[in-house]
Image (cartoon, helix red, strand yellow):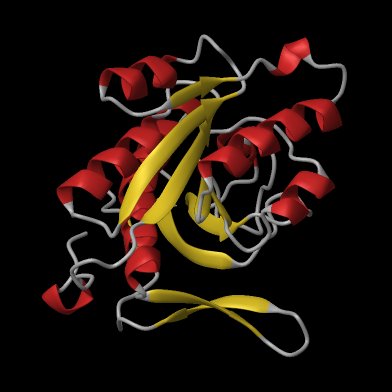
Amino acid sequence: MSDTPSSTPAPGARRQRLAVLISGRGSNMQVLAKACEREAWPAELVGVISNRPAAAGLAWAAARGLPTFALDHGAHPSREAFDAVLAETLDALRPDWVLLAGYMRILTPGFVARFAGRMINIHPSLLPAFPGLHTHRRALEAGTVWAGCTVHEVTAELDHGPLLGQAAVPTRPDDDEDRLAARVLRAEHRLYPELIGRLLRGGLVREQAADGRVHYAVRDGRPRGFVLDPQD
């Protein structure tokens, strides 16, 4: 996941601001935070926000000195009301990128529009297959040969935004939902920081065509995904 020396930002260049949304333990948030520090991304993590005040990921982030924000979605009368508070919290952080890392809430169209083009999610399937919940169970029930994960831009249509990259995970004859989920999570922990690091350094570039369609173009010559070793 290391980057070439030519991708190192110039001294004094503005560091991009990252905000991460979580709902639970935030394992993908943790690998993003560690990669940002270890690989000297041209960025800083300016806030970790959870819709569940008891989320374990908040405690991990706070112990690491990261700003944390606990917003209880149950304390608001509607999804729109909660998303308005969430948007205000994010606006105060002035993020260049909003990264969803196990954030288990469907976002309202108004919220998505507010942060359009700068909000990224990781989903535990090879989209467009199996959007939504229970992805591993559905993949096994369908008899798929491959499972995996996808990093994509968030749009108003659930789990259907432009793809940054994917990792394929072969299924096994003895798989159950938990075993497959554990292997896909290992792939997530590699794929998400790899792609975000490249995005921040210009190795992946968001481009929009005249007809409005968006895609992420490769500028560093590297593949946008991998296949997890079957023995991993």
